[in-house]
Image (cartoon, rainbow, N blue to C red; front, side, top):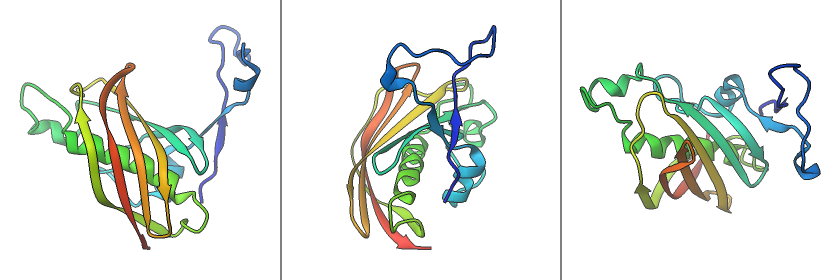
Length: 172
């Protein structure tokens, strides 16, 4: 299991914690750094598509980021002179964020989540080098050998991709 760390917002001028106008939002966000993600997911370069989990709600949801750079190996061929992140990799990034949620569920710590299906996936805008992909997954169903998530990927608040992801869970 990973270690959850606390991340507090700081003011760039005085480095003191930024006050929250809403007391419900005064608690620091829970985040997972790349070392924590690598303890939970078997993926490695060039197929680890999550750089950080910036919000994690146990048994419910996670939000992760993927910083898309021109140095990604897939941009060599997709497409020369017009680099666009392949849609299947955006969906895979959503699945990896969903895998973080599943690995934290009681009794599923030693399970590997594999794709069982994808439904209602739609691509709304291209993802290009320089974009920061913000990926949110919300748990819809969790059973002993099956999980279902709603995934959403955005760039600068614009929807890039959304859909339902189904997982089959197997022992590691």
